[in-house]
Image 1 (tube, rainbow, N blue to C red):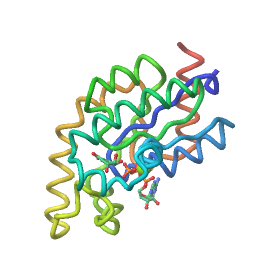
Image 2: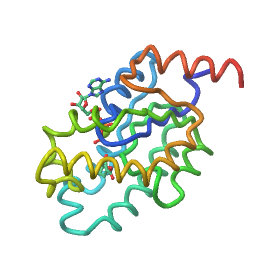
Image 3: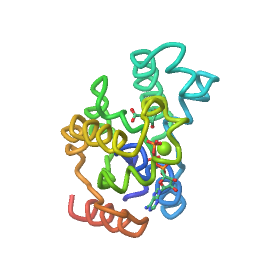
Length: 176
Ligand SMILES: Nc1ncnc2c1ncn2[C@@H]1O[C@H](COP(=O)(O)OP(=O)(O)OP(=O)(O)O)[C@@H](O)[C@H]1O
Ligand SMILES: O=C(O)C1=C[C@@H](O)[C@@H](O)[C@H](O)C1
Ligand SMILES: [Mg+2]
């Protein structure tokens, strides 16, 4: 039953949506899609280039449109969403209506350690000077996003694994 649905991985940048999503899809023998990659393919430019040329509002419109197109084309898949996806254009309502959102809940210090090395390719993090500022930024962003992430029916805490996600999904589908 798990593999007849759309599993939507949501969570902060660095939570592991792409890395774990790919592995979960292999384990479930389901197609894997990454919303950021779909946006890059549709726009034929990188995410930092989209933000720089058009700004965040445009990016969020494209993100919402591509989400709906990918879902329409894929009745079963594991989809790694973007970090901000659930927070714009009623996307969280859409995710809940069309599949099973699973929130990867990772602590701020762990996110900071993972994101530290990749700031330059993340358009919302490029101007952050040091680890203290990064910690403050991640904490503030998470505080704003938490209300959206918390609507997910499934939540994997800490250093999540494919096995832990599989167990959550399996329990959810056998009890619902
Ligand atoms: N469970 C994990 N334990 C340790 N490191 C991890 C784990 N999951 C992901 N990472 C590492 O954290 C970094 C970010 O992972 P990933 O790109 O999958 O996150 P993401 O949620 O897709 O982020 P984004 O929203 O920016 O696309 C990568 O360097 C990855 O190797
Ligand atoms: O957290 C965010 O708002 C973002 C996360 C990335 O996945 C990309 O979707 C983009 O860089 C925006
Ligand atoms: Mg990703």
